[in-house]
Amino acid sequence: MAGQQSFLLDHRQTFIFINQTHHVMDMATWNDLPTEIQHQILGVYCFDIVNTYDDPFFQPPPIVELAKFCDNWADPPKILKSFASAMRTCRFFYDTIIHVVKVDGMSPFDKLQSIQRDKVEQLLLTSEYWGPGVSGDVWGIEVYTSRAGIFWKNPLICSDVDLMVQIIMELHYDNWLLLLPHLGEWVLAHSRPVSGQVSGDRLWRDELAEIVDGEVRRRDKWVVIQPGNYGVPFYDVDWPSGAEPAIRTASGLYKGSRHMLWRDSEEWKNYGEGYPPMGENQYTLRQLNMNKELVENFAVVHDIDNSEPESWWVFARFPMEFVIVDYVGKRMWGTQTRPVMCYWGDDIWDPTSWKLGSEGRKFGIFWLLGLGDYEERDGEPSGQVGDAIE
Image (cartoon, rainbow, N blue to C red; front, side, top):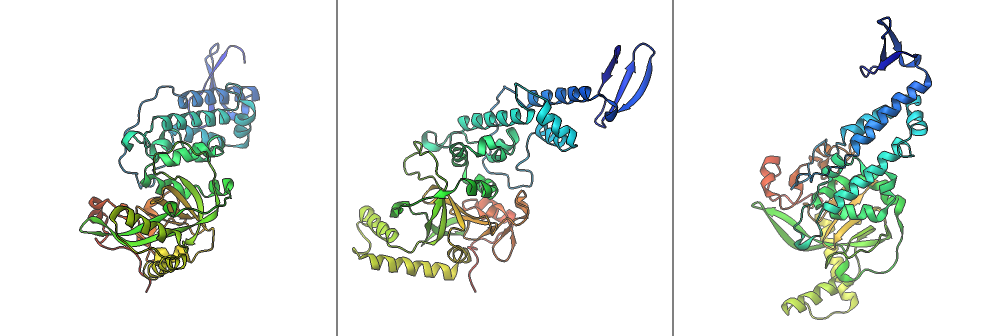
């Protein structure tokens, strides 16, 4: 086709060839083009996608004080949407992009995955949750998804357990509630048997709370979780003092003596008061009595304690800051939420469709503790603490 120039004029896979000699315009479809030309066109398209996504200029994203619990919180870059659409157009497009076109010696798909990891690492390096005084800038999960995309599905990222754990631990607690429901396959892929007892001060625990006049008030009733036998091992970096990051299964409520022993020791050390020293059986009995009271009065505690062993996963940053997730039952609860279970159901991507408690109340930001300003707007009655078992 010497002496002719070709121009891609629209997205209907129709190409107009202009014969500059005779000024004759002929119509041709995609299938009329030689395979070499088809490859070249897709190659130019892929180079443009990669160059647009691989923008070296980094502008710090805006600080988001609260996660966006909306249906578009995980909206990836438009350029990645375009690429994904091209991959799904037809088998020829897919095979050409994966096996024929090369960018820096690799397929455009592999190249974009590599760039995506670089973007995630760049965001991680500029986030400062663990910074001095824990007062630095922290990027929300929607910043990661809007800049990099759905990173946890990238094998270059999700296969690097240490990197994934760093990302998780850098996110604010409310961001966990959006991300963790998506990590079921990831924890199963990387879980390993773990052994050893957990000391009383490291047991995951939460003092149940209620909202009274817009303020969080803790109850002197402690939910203590029994660590399970499987976990996701990761490199123990220099975490801040008191931090005990963990990703591990749970097996109901703790039924031993160590938590009560630790609590009494803390009372004596800090206040010079509390129960006199007891034997192991007495500490255990006190723990069982507290468990019984909680199970009888809170459905969320009842559900956790009456589930199959190893069926829950705990994501913890501190012993008193964790989220416990049941991937089979599609539900979760955490220490910074009201004592009501959250169910994400069939639409894991849209928090506005999630439900709270066995009554199926509409999910709202009021579920998180300490957000009194949102209570009246979202319609949750002040003071409601959870589902009691009738």
